[in-house]
Image 1 (cartoon, helix red, strand yellow):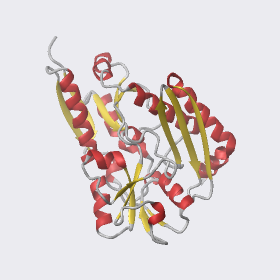
Image 2 (cartoon, rainbow, N blue to C red; image 1 turned 45 degrees about the horizontal axis):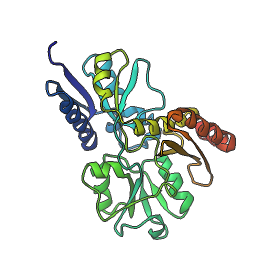
Image 3 (cartoon, rainbow, N blue to C red; image 1 turned 120 degrees about the vertical axis):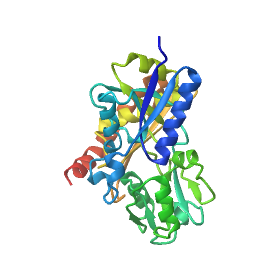
Length: 309
């Protein structure tokens, strides 16, 4: 059999390229005869930066073009931040592997490098996430939370230029790009529950490409996959999208998985939280359990209001 070439569709941002190069290096290490190339693409979500993500169609805009490239045979797989992957994939596509997770927490970047309570009264804080906005305002209603779009270096530049007193970013992106420094304060999940799938890299393939699926399966991390499966099952139960502030964080200790979930009002005036635990093997069931519990506890009303607005 002739050596196979794998083509990875990827966003062209610094972080997306780092992630895709990381996957490519891991695949080459598994099979030195394998040729892996990158197909960088600029997605709709990368091009439209003057409007909040929720207003232009949500996180799915970061992966649609990559899926088209796979469907058309221009790429064999795509590498994503799992937090950008919608709760439901299009027909014909599957997540073939989820790599070991980086720190899923959020980071508050400020001059002093402190936490949320250290910010001055009325401080202007930049974030593109309704999830982060709602949790910031729940803790500090005085903060002026302003929209901030763009890749990680662009957001940091705008912070350095003085547009914001602080910004909130994912720890994983800062670590992977070597940008985590003394200005970065990692926020405990109790203070800022992370996004579903945050910190995890996923590999998307065509469901009928058995050879590709077999190759990437070797990169799958069972514990990370279970944590992400629980979070995504919760998100699917809630009908999660960028239009609603939803957070989920699963952790595994001694084979037992615990999932914390949250649904919030955008202005932070109401938070619905639920937790469930069980065997790692029952990750998806636990996720659905947390989702159903939140719906019953008031999330259904919050979600209906947000989806109608």
